[in-house]
Image: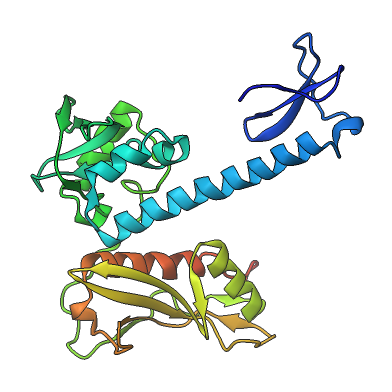
Length: 284
């Protein structure tokens, strides 16, 4: 970003998301001088930095939603947003699938003409022009371990957690009537408030006594929910069972839960449970 002159002695700019000052000679200062802290240009830059942070978070959240819901994304849309640095950072190096569901590649570029530059799993850079692409959830990727190994060889890092996202596979032999999982039940927290705060900090929605996440899987929307305690309960609370509901609020039997919904529900339950009180000492 260009440097702005605020008086004869200083210039200011956003540097790595922080308002920074320098002398007209070009010498950058370690701290913002006291005389500039309330300057209108400095305040404007602070507000711009806050907006950029919100925009970046919004881009990451939207791309994550596309991936979790396995929604087809128009290639023209990717081409349109690609010049935006925040969108580009969220999208770069994500595994995508075009017209051939068996051909997975890592997104490296999108041109204004709607052409995507992708590195495929053979290490070749190819150009694709499908009408839409999907950003597959890792539980849907065949040979996920091989994809992860190849990504490590390429030095790929992803802003949106995709290929290294923890995954859970629904076990076989579930009873036909089962509707809940208790693998991560019983995680004790000092209060219901602290448990709800953890859910919110992890990006989950708190509704009533539940931490929830919505997923579109196998053609329908379902909501995974973990019991976290009655609202306004001000004493010790614990994680409860995990279950899934359809759009009408009906319980979904475990054997009917799709692979993405299962993995994301278990991921939420495990993440909540990980923040529990852990006893120390000989009786732990």
